[in-house]
Length: 365
Ligand SMILES: O=c1ccn([C@@H]2O[C@H](COP(=O)(O)OP(=O)(O)O[C@H]3O[C@@H](CO)[C@H](O)[C@H]3O)[C@@H](O)[C@H]2O)c(=O)[nH]1
Ligand SMILES: [Mn+2]
Image (tube, rainbow, N blue to C red; front, side, top):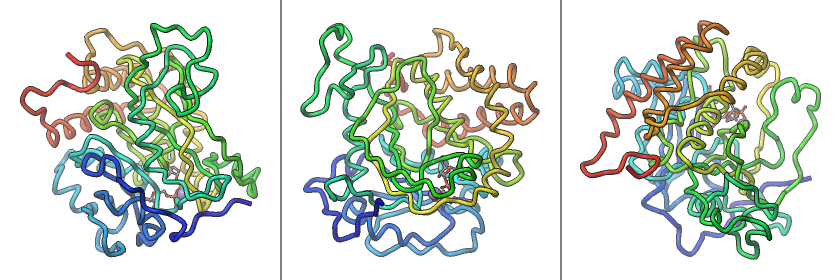
């Protein structure tokens, strides 16, 4: 039986790394009491709270946190007609927080994710581990069998080409979950009592050419390297699908990271996922995705981005073009989604104009 750490067990790090270079984005429909247990780890950082649902509701934030909060009225005011690309009544709305942030790094977490304990009983500072993952190179071109070679007490194993040992910049750090695992509704229905009690002490680079199911509840990324591709799609209110927000973003970012030579890691850190959402509600949200993805995955596996796609924006707009061409036959939804992807990039570039002399994201020009 795994249990979350208590607030007192979480000890504040001596020096909070990237304190002024990282925003924590939280999508929410409830008061954020959960921050109390994260206080030692999160208090030094700026929070961006994306309030979903009824904008007239007041979200209570525990005192002492530095935050900005956006509800649907704010999103509509800031983006105008382009707000149509931001989902309503779905955790996908969190991507608005990525867009308005001015920081280099983002960590996003759900409000039902508590501080996990490692096998020794020590509280896991998930943010600290994500930062470690992002600041260390990835190795997507050749698999290191001793896992993360940059970790203390590990290295590249015999036979690992020296020409590849520098690795590549890490764009995404995908964390995992103790207790309630991120299962789809059918699996959740079949195994309602299953809890993840396995704490696997490893961080892996996801090899180039391999897609993965990205979960948005414990995720960090380098906004400068891959931010414009972290669009969580059109989900929730008025949409035929839900709970594929993070999946869609994960497939897009992985194709683009592979193209730009950037790395994606998965594994540590763990959070403690405290509650299971309703499997019947989830089934209704995700059922189309369960059969659509049998066509979506081959699309992403076969997607080729032209050499002149040298920035994330160019890659993303090209991907949107291919979605429109090749997935609209699956369902008219993808035609809408492709347009929303382009709207997202326009909105992103409006809120994040390139500064004079800056290098566009992805490979240095
Ligand atoms: O309409 C809504 C519902 C919820 N939220 C906020 O989003 C996160 C996640 O909500 P919850 O924990 O209830 O849902 P899960 O099924 O566990 O979510 C995971 O599944 C994926 C669904 O897309 C997602 O990647 C994971 O988050 C909480 O913070 C809610 O407050 C919302 O904003 N709007
Ligand atoms: Mn949850």
